[in-house]
Length: 218
Image (cartoon, rainbow, N blue to C red; front, side, top):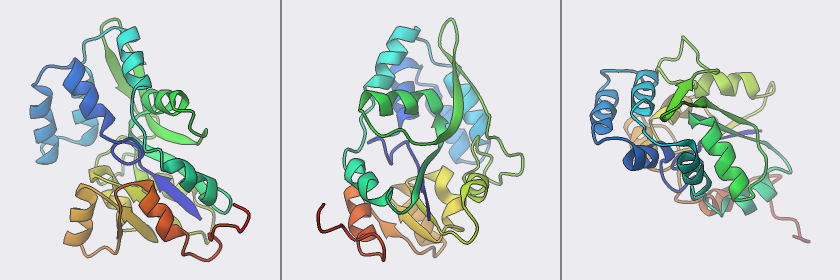
């Protein structure tokens, strides 16, 4: 079984990129966001334009990334689930931000698939090592393609996510845990899902599955 975990707003307590832009970019970043939400530009175009608005030196940005708050209930979830399943982070966010936040909070080292962040003289830029030209959602990281690439034959895919970048995979995953706008998407498209607020909710459901009961000595 493969658990595909979103980062921004799922493993982190809020959207990292939005918080970054609020702190280090002019308010015009929100107009770019609206253009993306309205379908006028792709997620790739949105992220590229927004990150180029960031104005800060590297020490300030590194401090920001270290202070990203994570859902601490992920740790008991990881301890149980990792015994019987593979867990990966697949995010249409920023790889360096994820690595830095995970390290700062002493979270387990997990495979991370995300867009590549670059520091410039005045701020940030981005590149797309996992870009899939066939991605129907226009994301920098196509979660459907990543799941197909990572899942072993005959294995099940479990998605844990909260937003627009998770929508495509939600229609294909065997099990979906949804929060935020992903709930509204699942309801609108009749996609079966489990609602959650934190990974404690996800763990409570997973514990009811065969092979995932808490051992007696735990």
